[in-house]
Figure 1 (cartoon, rainbow, N blue to C red):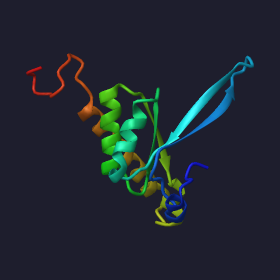
Figure 2 (cartoon, helix red, strand yellow; figure 1 turned 60 degrees about the horizontal axis):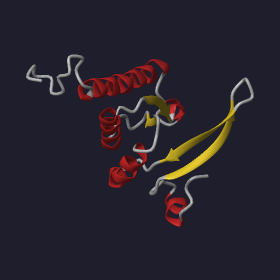
Figure 3 (cartoon, rainbow, N blue to C red; figure 1 turned 90 degrees about the horizontal axis):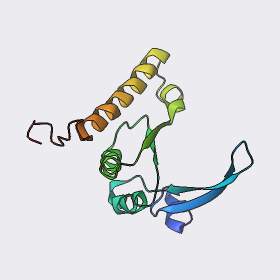
Figure 4 (cartoon, rainbow, N blue to C red; figure 1 turned 60 degrees about the vertical axis):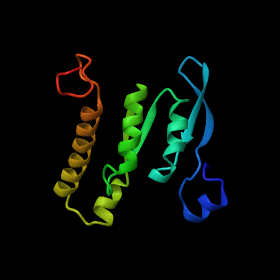
Length: 140
């Protein structure tokens, strides 16, 4: 629904940030406008991500489990941390671990665990220290 440019449709990839707003109702019948912004995943389009992150209340980071944490993911996580934007992780292409790579369940689990640990280490390394020290060397 969000890849609307001819180039995006042809190459099956997002090259321009595209918002889509959905009405979502709570259990009490109140309706909210929920806007999702589909952003490019390639580092070449990082400026699109930075601009979009200025407008949002949160980020859903969709991470390709086969590729793991990419340069683009790293840049987005860094920007979210700098802007104080909460993140939610979604792992994509989980089925390909078994269907395409033919991994046994234990190996698939280890791959998933490795990618999550890699992302957690990245977040930890980029996050401000509790005492306000941003660079981790004790010199504030």
